[in-house]
Image 1 (cartoon, rainbow, N blue to C red):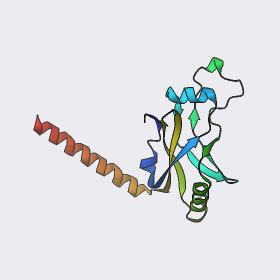
Image 2 (image 1 turned 180 degrees about the horizontal axis):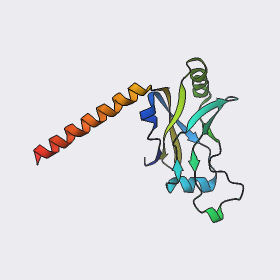
Image 3 (image 1 turned 90 degrees about the horizontal axis):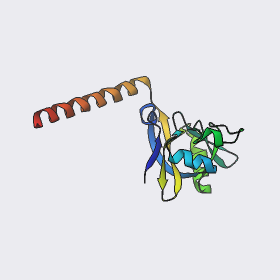
Length: 150
């Protein structure tokens, strides 16, 4: 299970609650681009419209720009493949609980490309500062441990 793209800011900007695994509907040349590392999930999120889930804000740059169709738009909305039960559940969460659904990562699972999505609650500024402080403290502890263990 190789990770192809990650949304690094998702864990910093949001408190992730529940995670789901979804398939993604891609065109043939997009699959090759994703496997080659041309996918970016920065700012990607999911919306539920008409009983279907769509990934918005994900960018898949063309693998070979000269062989890509002229009308190709890298930031287009892509349909996510979820069960009806999951779509209804995510739609209710989005509407009633006012939570955001963010794309966390894109990875291979066998021959298929999957997207890990999570329901998330936005962090406040002081929560982000606290996260940074914890990360810095852990980094300093690791440095001192490695320094004295040598």
